[in-house]
Length: 419
View (spheres, rainbow, N blue to C red):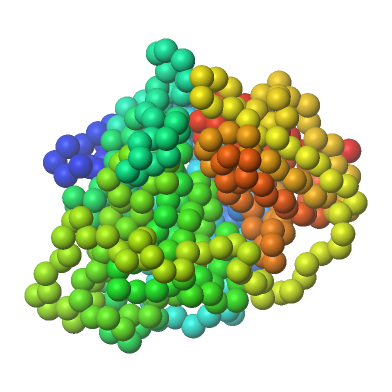
């Protein structure tokens, strides 16, 4: 059920927002690979809503994009989502209506493998998010718009951001951190998800390195890193060897906003009376060591795909004093669809003319970037580039958009239409 409710992000200070089944983040849905999923969404909100099953390919009518694959679920109505979860991995489900993600309508969706590609003893779902205590509103580069400009300490100069009150891990602010338990000798699988409205995070764990084993739910050859960048809509699975007993800081720093970092604790069961680290302790991986680079990851399947049949060039622009975010100068929904044909191999080349990161997400398909499969790719600012290849094998009308929801709502989206 999607309905208004109260949560305590700040201890002792409940605030009213919109929730799935009264929880923030929403309840984790966990199914087995190949299982049929039937979810009835009851809309008890004062406006229409939908649910998008982020990352996992579903039939077009189940994709949850208002105006593209379905009409919004009206207040008081229900809608049945029905599909088979045939691709294992770490995914999300969230509202795809307006700015409702920043109301709190986000949650993890896990499809467990029949035969896991890695061995582990315990797992934790780690949800990175931003906290907007009021009603979300469109950003504006001009007077009267809701905006916070990033500063030098935690963010990038000139970045347009909502007035977030803090950053969260599993729905809790850094002064009241979530505690993740482990034991000496365990291999811990972390499912890292970023369903936030507008925050790109850099994540690290004090005293520990991470073996990245999946990107956007798709298995990769293990790669040891000290930190990783995770944009809105992205997910990474990592294995952590629990070989340093004690209590350690897990931290996620905003790349484009001047906010205190999100913080959680990794606590060993045999830590005894170990003193938690100071709140301002910064994991060494955020200051030095190896940061994850997509080009260093290698897929397990080695299926690179054939050469593209067509290439589409897209320019991403906006920001500064403009309230519009555009693709090739056009703003969605008043933008021409991109026509593709079933069976062809499509290459999309993007160049970012703006000063902000853009996590570009393709619905209904996985794409190839570097040597791995993903569904969301971060395009760096200041003339940064990214190229993706995918096979048009899932007919329908599919959205391709920036997963910064404020950029999407301000026009940075296109429909890919099968001819």
